[in-house]
Length: 519
Image (cartoon, rainbow, N blue to C red; front, side, top):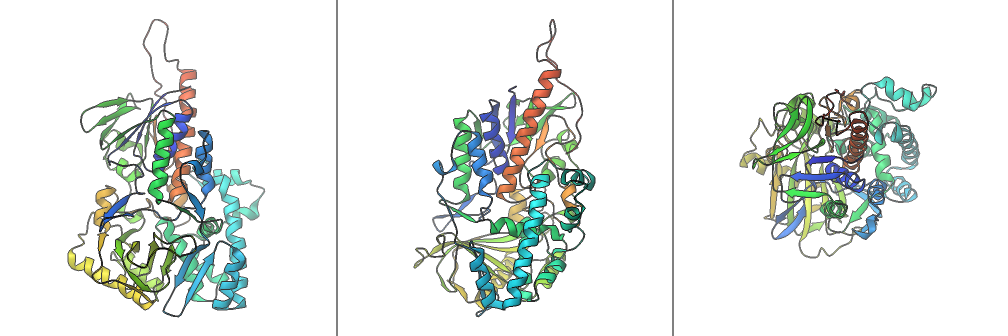
């Protein structure tokens, strides 16, 4: 049965929820404080050019195919999407370069040329293990509702499949297990980097996160117009199905009546009544009281020590020379443990690894780049944007460290560099109550996945969605969280209507005050 749903935030999770709920006939209103949709998938103008300032790697295309299919549409009718031939190009110095390809055979050949036959065997064994972990968890956890303890997960996987339960390796660190596959420290570092996709240290994350490399190996896709084009396509689709968008308006408070979410109050004083509210925001903001004292009871507060990484992000429109950039390129630090020790100590790394997204390069790495090109450059940093001020001197020092890494690997940027720099301070402003943590809760320790906020909250009628909610960070995972929220809302609304009729003979409509657990 249909109901009124207000979605707070138009990030990927909120947009995915909006499409599914509107397509199912619900009355959907999306409220977004910015003037655009997409959340972190935003663009910022530099030197007159719009540069993607958020996520750049698009994987698990099938997640979005499913969203459009649920609304009777096709993704390809809304955006131009094509596969990347090169997943990423990696460098350690001016001589050591390695491509990973969409074709795994080409990747094997490249690894063999780079590090020898033993490295190829290690890569094959690593791929098998990563694929097995993904296969075990894909439908039992990643695409299913959150479980709060290992035993329910064991039931989903099957208690009789003890080998699979052991195979996900939750009690060993990613860095340690990679040493079983790769004797070459460069390859160990390359595949350890996937921990940063969810804002975590490879020295503290469980080896379970090898599955991230398998996700990328299934295909990286390039979207004309960047990730914001995908967000705009989802908005268009949601509107076609009847959803309404209120942009440039901030939600002052999530209203709770008789123990249940009943609507939202905007900063301009307007009230939007709702049978269900989906908070497409970092749960840390919800728990800190950013949406009112009543709503703060919905989730546990986030402790700063549990935050994911933040970042220093340079958005540049610049000439480049030397290193042959592809769409995604990574330039590694010579001392990976020290890099993460610096971050753990509360400072950006002095000798950082650097990721560069060359947004004008095509699927093979070529592009019209004989003049200036649009670049997003990322260095990992601590999520201390609420306690530490990144003054101009420190910003310049970080910029010089970033340029040293690139120069060591052969990439030169024009000087002066036309750019804007986002630090943890800017991310804290954009993502309040997070310290600038971009990925929500860090995936450190065996229990991290069970501690991440789930779809349901402690307040009936109030739900969470987004990259900081189960199943985790990244564009497809945020969209999966939106799917889970939409399914739970629809199920709960149907149950409420069935057992608590909207109209009682001779009386007024009443809503259930039944409590729900966090899940």
